[in-house]
Image (cartoon, rainbow over all chains, first blue to last red; front, side, top):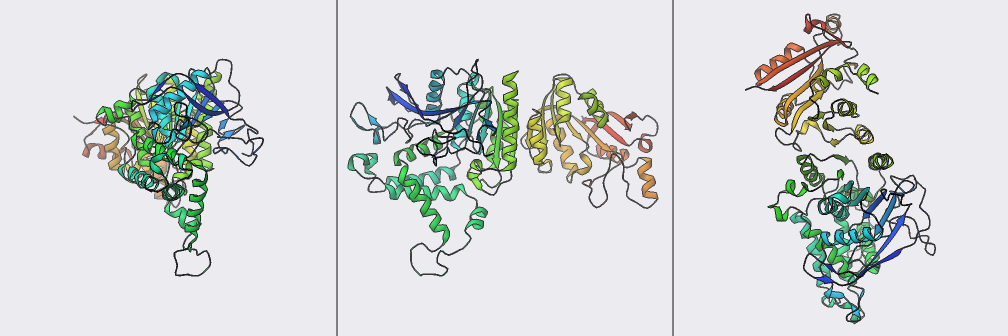
Length: 377
Length: 200
């Protein structure tokens, strides 16, 4: 498990053709940051696309020559001999449109004004992302992916691929995800957004020109999100009621360890993440609902899919619970698609999909070994 | 691989004989997926398994068998009415807690059910009980204290259940050590496979 793809280099793809968003907004030109690992085979049939979740990006595995401590966010899953095996597959990670890691997003300069897009950047949907990803695939000469893999919001993109481009993906690995968010989930996102939107330094999304960053709002949003990504048990195990200084101080400073942890996570995130990107990502989550235009009938939505599916959930994930994965499985079974479903026992809540769990790794490895066998046939 | 599977699981061939080519099959408690794999290779079925064990789920996936990780005891909510031509419950009936409810679920999601189980009425089992011990055999290789089998039954018992629960028996195949048993099956058969459907 210790093998790494080693030194990697981020690349930039430029698109000079207009992209029309689901909202009707238009972007005449845009760029996407991406990285690739492994080698594309002669018939270009061994490509795997990794779709990232809320705070992810194109740096999925390996590290940079000038920043060796900056290890990719899914390095435990992607690499030589790892479940997403870079000796067998050509793996692509990208930063989605609207992101803040180099792809065109709210903090990028709008060439028509010479200023950052800010509030004028279009609200992006999962559908828009997948359309942009398809153009990246076109540019790389990949007609059909061996597999598209994603957890959480990334799982929604992987599913959307199967629905929008059924002939362009052979396998979908949808992990810790849902066919749409519940009201409770949208509610959490709205509180997170409110924290950002009401930060006086947000300036309606155009804070760049004011030389300020709405870190307070972003920090609160992340703190709230973080609570929901962990399980009650994991928090109890890790922090319990432990006090930072061993005694009560009768003040509003940090007293419990959990407070210290959450504030640290919030500060760390607010230091590098873009507030507008956070808003966009949560909106994309809220909007995703492939059954919306089909009277809520997910069975009909999945009739379009041709891919084989692996669906994975985690027992303590209450933000994208196993019941939500069952909805996906049910729709696939209704349409008699090939599907396997694994419910992994894990203590880590929604974050489990990024953790290294023996059963999770075994399921991913076994499934992808089968995908590799299919390619070599 | 087929030959060795048939040797180790004589009920597989009996089950396969009742599965039409190309039909949709659900295997409940599918283990490592070897029956589904066998049916896919010999009968070209579209098959899914249900399995609770982590190790078996991982092996099914390695075998390229569709598997849904779930507890049979909690019902078959993932599956719609009449979703399958055949629903198989192979050597699992005796280990289920909610046996009655499961039988109903099998015939809700399947047009037919195929159920195999060890016959508690087999004479060797009866002998062991007569001698004062719980039976241990190839089909029931457990001590009383570590057995997963909580609802053992005889052929008569199972047929009584069918009669009182509006289940029609379409066919029955009784075996001992892989050989067919046609005489005094409830006494001479160590294992039985039934093909059933909803009555009426």
